[in-house]
Image (cartoon, rainbow, N blue to C red):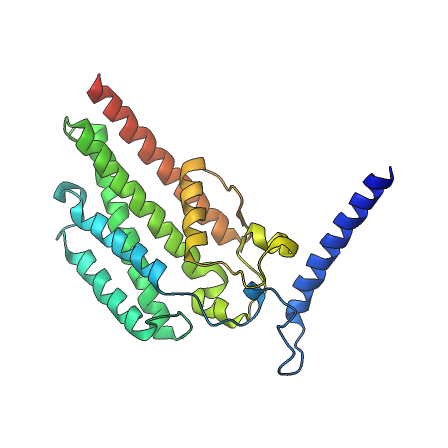
Length: 255
């Protein structure tokens, strides 16, 4: 009984500590003293590295380029060229760390994500149409490769959306001005076992997107805002349809 009482006491104490840290996000101390007691995701930081997100965008563009023309928006290279141009501009503005914020940069970043999502949505619709009317061809390998490319682009696109919209985007998160996350990561609920400099970066959102696309539900990251819940719902629905149709058609071809 003594051990059980001690365990409950420690658990309650840990919960109260977390609550105090979250509530203290709205408290502004004198210059030089604020933020020192807060976890990194709640305070101003130098901004995350540009490279991981840029590599993901490049991967999505390559996947769109290598898709067969019958599954791509025409002209085939229109969207990839636009995406490359926007990516170059974003890298020029924040070449190493994403810590510069402006309406123009925000619009360019969201426009690039919209272009990636539009191209992949068109490809997914064309794939479903070809699968339904039986014009997708008789090569199971080619069909699986096409489905994998569309599914992979879908994972990257949603990862970028989650990363770009959570608490106003990476530049806004670096300023630490919004204490209300749209996604609750495990590290946020267990600060006592989390490195003091931890904050969510693109790779965390990529993991979130991948697990949601494979498990069709949240795993260790919980959506808090309504837009986050609806986006995860849409991603799961798209993933279920794509996987079910492509695999079933490929199995029929193998038979």
